[in-house]
Length: 527
Image 1 (cartoon, rainbow, N blue to C red):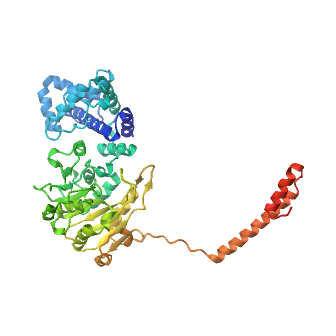
Image 2: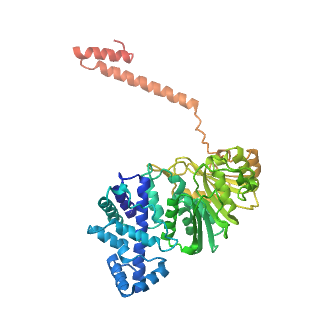
Image 3: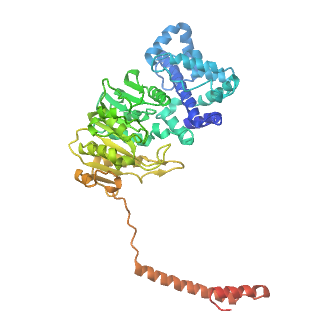
């Protein structure tokens, strides 16, 4: 892929200068800035000429923009602000910076000025490029070295055709980077990037029965790059009427999510994102605070305060216990479930421990099961997430269900083994979703457990208790095996006799006599 090839080439320029977890910030920030710049060139061309069947070169588009800018700069700025929500001056466009880099006239201050100017254009862009530290000595010990480093990266990234890439550009770029450099870039990648296959499973399931809703409100309290929320559009009939609500603790990742949503054409009015601690303080508290879908892949078994004050928090007070201080899994789950509408669906990825651990977690799990909140438990294969090889489980939750049964799906053995990761194939995803829709038992794959079964298992949801995937070994026919061994021994005896006979026919010399005698003794043929 062009995207992957150019990212690899760009990473080569930065590799050795800094850790992979750092240089991905430079690459993703510059890819995003290139996208905004190239989108502006297209928008100007469309405004002047209508939408073409095929766009001319960027040189032609740039000439269109500069002609308009020279003629009436204020009109151009106002038109682009209405159309795009921003305007990048001609001297700050990625195309201009690329041309300067090609003629070795580029100065790092040109890019810093471009970032600063865009960051001033409203809340959507404020602080977006804070992690692209152009003054870092890791880029070079002095300005000229830093100029050369960034100049080479710009030239390489400019080869990417962002509009020719199908799918989630920022998400795909991020996934590619951490897959190639997992030892560095993926240090905590499992905390904030959900592989596309898992995103599709959750998105398709939570959309079932809600496909016609418009507007549709989705919430991710641990949103990472935002890709998990964005996937919902594939499964709704009115994808342009989705409203995105998300929170993220890590500022770098929060900015990544903002880039991702903007890159996907999400209007400012349709995104409500917050940089904060989901567990420490409830958010959102203003309307809407209940959502059609809640999706989440929180950091696994993270630490949280578990302070006594949370026993009076409306998110947790109904369960009598708090998630342990060393394992916040159920705290994330209860937070998300609290923000789910009565007719909505929630999907959350967690480690298997939430299915069977006791003490406070056992009390919380029992309450959820007694109220019918847990609708399905889906076991995924091990080693499908970057940054962790542990097997994970998707829990599907609903409010006010008529039944308290639970569907168990064991999809842990359905995957394609790749070089570093296991991968869910399209047929594996379809099999999971189909089993969820059918909601019936399938031998060695799915089991619809009654509430009485769950009570009998002491509210333990460990999947092997409900889905038996044991394969009995084929029984051995002792009589047939004995006959086969007898026939084999007879064949060996015949071959040995034949071999000894061949030795007798060999011409014997002084050098070979001793060797032949020793061989006969080994095979029982005498001296």
